[in-house]
Length: 292
Image (cartoon, rainbow, N blue to C red; front, side):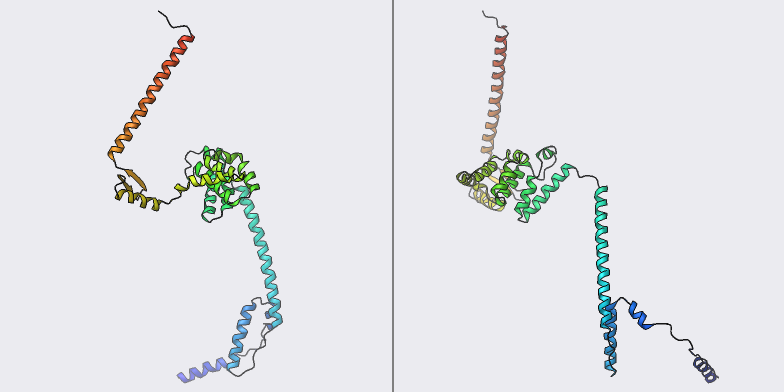
């Protein structure tokens, strides 16, 4: 029974006849195919199989590969140009729809960028950004403590000296009315810049020599103070965490406190005597003094 069923099934299978030709046009399919890399990989794998079985290799259509590569490259370049134009138009539209940045925010961003350039040893870029900072805008923001006016004068002036020539120094620093207001807070930097520009190098060297004692680091200063404390030259403590030097000599503190109170008393006495003199002058002027 099982054998008869198997024979009948086999007979039905063998009776299927394909009487319609395949509609696939291989040449047209290959001509319209765009993935030349996959075509090359497939052809290489096919040739490996044919070679392993002793058959001749399948010829690769190099002309089609070259044409397809050129067409793909042209399409890619066109798409990249369209993408670039779209990005530019999108950026312009975003700029038009974005509100203007407040001047104080712009000043903060310039100072932050200047500090970043300074950390990267790009002194000219840092100097340009420090010099563009507006004094009036910075002065109007009392809570702006990232970099105060004096530090901006020092950093901007020194970066300009290190990277500008005389012409740039004259135009961007000496004739810069905005930055002059910063330099007024640091006279030694102003004298340094003017002395260098006017070729008065003795003034420059004298200023550098005066400020040489401040050219130390916190760890070095801490070691020197610790040595003075251990050798009992000074009575003090060092808070390494807060980087604070605390004087503990009670006699010195009392003496300093006494001087402070004495100075306050002298100021009060001077104020009283001045007021008395002004009162007497006004009375004499108004003829209100009765002479006996």
